[in-house]
Image 1 (cartoon, helix red, strand yellow):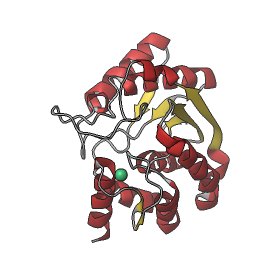
Image 2 (cartoon, helix red, strand yellow):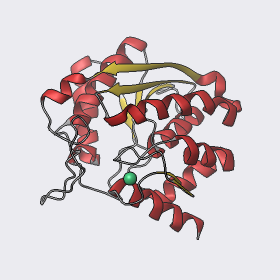
Image 3 (cartoon, protein in one colour):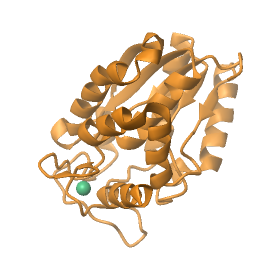
Length: 233
Ligand code: ZN
């Protein structure tokens, strides 16, 4: 850790990746705040998951509990006006011919990062930590490393303040993400992720698998399950 980036804002959705990123940030930064976006996600499952994870994380990582600061939630209902996807409307999850799921909202991550940058500025936080990843699934062009570097430059120039975008998962796969969580918080953190984080695209909280709750067939469940199997073997 350097003195240049002592504080961070974690983009925290309540999923496996962002929960792992939050644990990573608590280890690396001396002050950490969290940010979620409410944009009418189906069943509000993600919003419930993030509350559950935030409530339990200090018990699992007591050595860093003093570092965890306020949680922020921004209302992004406006996203519903620029997208027709299964995240914001009652549509079945599908993968289009382009390979992008219909949950894809164009440039969504750019909006998230811009708002996160503005909030970080106001809260005097010097880094944004986000769980974007190129390794497992490159269907989202706004999660690519080049996009993150461009956003880091745009935010730093546009706010006239150096801001780091820290992407600890960019080059690791889902098996390595499970391993990273275990390195950071042992079995207790892995169990918290299994029980309380939510990744499934269709919002299934009925079916409990060894890797957590989910439908077991959507692309998000598939990645999570395959990563779990590779990590365990
Ligand atoms: Zn699923």
